[in-house]
Image 1 (cartoon, rainbow, N blue to C red):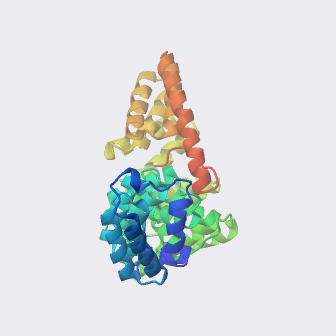
Image 2: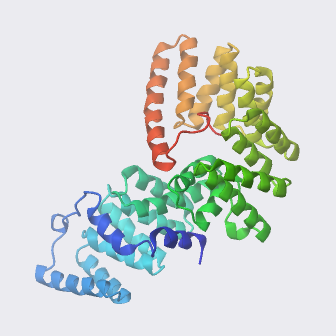
Image 3: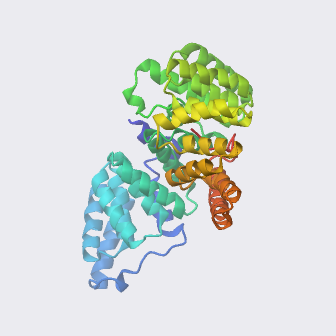
Length: 404
């Protein structure tokens, strides 16, 4: 059984709790299924209803193959019957037939474009088919549309979205989503492993790792989970033990430093970020952690050295340009600040904090219209961020800065 299947079973106590999903996706979101009579020429109503009754009976009796056969006949008769496509999709999904399930959910969301649960099921199918780019896109769309109060499905979507973010090297965003399980006190092996991969910045599947590394991932995942539950003494003990045991492994010093930053021990944290840089001189996140601390301490020369190196190594890293923008702004080098912050904003148009500082830079550059536009964009993005943080983690970010 894969990690992804296991988390579905753990969270939903069944293969995505199909009966619940079938009902809630069609009625729970407050959206009515499209009336096929407005879309297609109807088959004789009596014949259709007779066949539908047989399909419903087969489905309720768990005669899956027969139910699929009958529902597929029904959607051929009425291609605009959204409910039928939903049943075809869920039945195929529960049978691990992800390609036909994805095809059915694709038809469903064509008919019910505003139904987030349909997009969620499409994204989950695509995940199982290793179509990760489209899966991520559709899971994001599902969460933006809302899942009709279906908390079980919301948790499954959140988990899979976090796994995709880790694979895309967006580790902090993945950790923020997974932290929601800690806030809700919903511990499982799959969640701990996913959290450990994000904390240790490992963009790979757990199955691809050695047994020793899987144990390391689990230990860091458990430590991060305890921290998310606000069980700080237990989290500290586990972080301390994990750092001592695995200190020669990549990203262990960095992960421990991030933990110390969360505990408001920045000087202690810096020593571990420097250890990570000793192990890997091109470790950009560690450089940026040191740069931001230097900015906060008013040591702009040290900050600039680290930020410039980070931008050189990763020219598309928006956080590096954001750091440079702040450094130039604090040093009264306004044109350079605007240039770096505009570059950061282009690379990360959804980063509220970048717009906030960019508005300051525009104001200092005597560009009031641009400053007003950036402030308005900051307010819009900040509102979205607050909603997302409340949904995903139940708490504010520890630092309020863009994460490296």
